[in-house]
Length: 156
Image 1 (tube, rainbow, N blue to C red):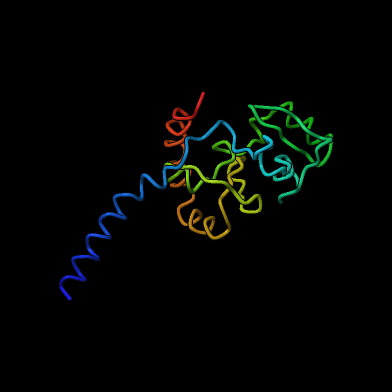
Image 2 (cartoon, rainbow, N blue to C red):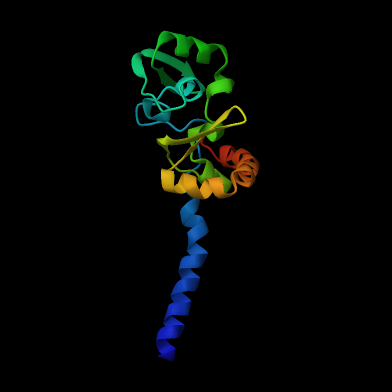
């Protein structure tokens, strides 16, 4: 029994030591995009504010900004974004806010979102969002502190 405990303790130590490196992931680019360079999985960032939900955008209402292609449900939303992209773009480049608060990046589910103090935050999933909400303000503060370092490691 002692040998099993020793083996388990060693395994726990190795996995625990490796987890921060595994969680780190690749450096973040300015905006979380898919293989075609589309942000937000093609969802309209303005609609989160005007409709309070994730709304798919369409290719004919597209705008290029910050190295990404942004899609919108209509021309009015595209034009609003073009005039004030920082007002509508998700925080932390559209990466998971929980992950950034833990100093790594992760993709998002466009339906796992929150608008807090006029800013859009996304999460990997609704389960992760539930954890993020437990200390939402603290997690936002941590993510704001981590984001510059994550961005600094991004490929140029």
